[in-house]
Amino acid sequence: MARDSLRPVIKLRSTADTGYTYVTRKNRRSTPDRLVLRKYDPIIRRHVDFREER
Image 1: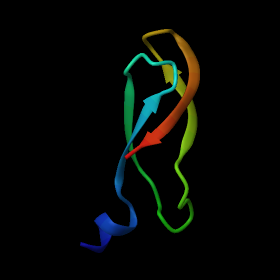
Image 2: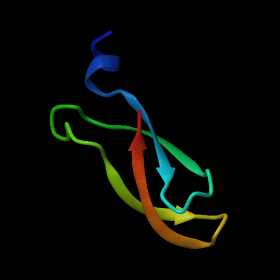
Image 3: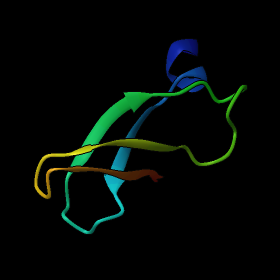
């Protein structure tokens, strides 16, 4: 069970309000803050920020 507590599965939701999400894992020790990644949103066909949602 240590795997789930150290590297939880998180959802990254688009900041463009399209409702598109990515699913990934993150390391809680190295990034305790909410994750923000710039990824491709196929609904609006451009790169936007994706923020971690809890």
